[in-house]
Structures are given as C-alpha cells and as structure tokens.
Image (cartoon, rainbow, N blue to C red; front, side, top):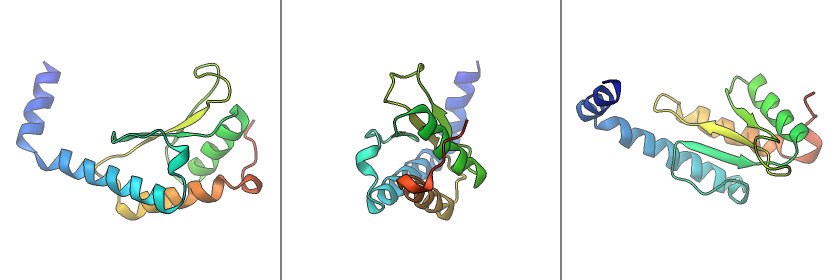
Length: 120
C-alpha cells in the first residue's frame, strides 16, 4: 500500500523528480569543476559514490565531512573488496545548492593527501 501511495504522491508533485535531477546535475558539474570526476562512479542517481580506497583513509574523509555537518557514510572492506572502499553521498531535493557546492569543495580539500588523518 505504501508503494502505491508513494506513486500517488509523486503524481501530485511532478516537480520533485525534476528538482532532484537538477541537484544531481549540479553535483556532477561541481565534481567535474573540482577535478574529482575520475574518482566517482558514473551515475545520474541521487546516490553518488566516491571511490577512495583504504578503510582508514575512507573513514578519515567521512569523519572530516561529518565534522562539517554532512551525513556522508563510508562503505568499508569487507563490505566492498579491499582497495575499493568508498563514500556514499545521498542528494535530496531539500539540499541547498550552496551546501552541495561546499560539500564538493570539502571533498576536494580532504582528498589532498596531507589533509586527511585516519579515523580509528
């Protein structure tokens, strides 16, 4: 029943999927401008995946973003193959454009080798 109601809700609010796709496009544009596109798994989904590699480094980047107020989750080995650890970033219609741009800037800064301390 709840799936049916979800489709009814979307039918009453056709602007929501359009707004979400715009947020994804903005995120991808920011990622490209910051030179990070090669680290992301290509996707037009609101769930974006940044490959980092290494549990400690991935946890460190996640902790850096979480300290700045972003709810970004690490996906670590053994959930994924060793060396393919990553961050899961979920975009929402209510995410302000500036917050999306700021997140990508933080990512770019955090991925500089000297800026990330392992989170244990």
